Length: 219
Image (cartoon, rainbow, N blue to C red; front, side, top):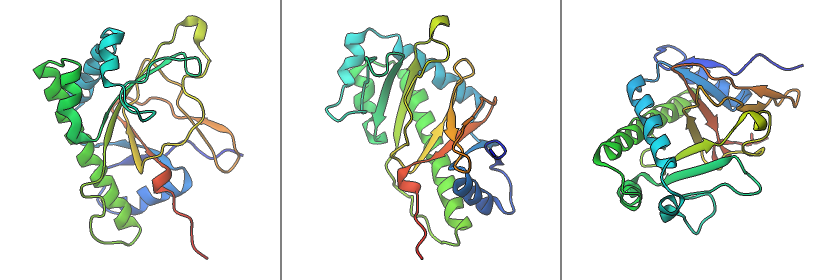
């Protein structure tokens, strides 16, 4: 039998927040957060910037293509015909990415503010994970961060088809700002093996534990 839906965690909770985050990671590997501290205006502005970058001509977006698969610009192909991606691989490369796409000063400022806010939030979640696990210190100071923007080219005829295939994230944590217009995120319930929807909830963010965050208990 499937368990209840993905947990929702209040990041302003004072008592027991670390333990609640650890429990969500152990039981689901995914959770939603409210009161995360990132202004709604900044989240909305970042969506506008991302949309404007995807509207650029193909030849301009391809200026960010990287030799390593999955980095830079990823165009639509036969395997993922509805998916298109752009990424800034390492927050230190923001200027290079923006220069290649001729990004405006306003757009650049929004991306930098968004990256800083998400980076700080990731550090806060990481510290709560350590706290809930009985550890001290800040192992996540200076960790590698990637900003990925995704676009799904759906139309009425493609509803119900797959945008991106079944996969796990290779990172430690993924913080996702999902979209009110494109739903369909699902995860596998480890207790029953069924797919469980992670439906959009206004004002929240999704946190997903990646491959690096998985720990195998020692006997």
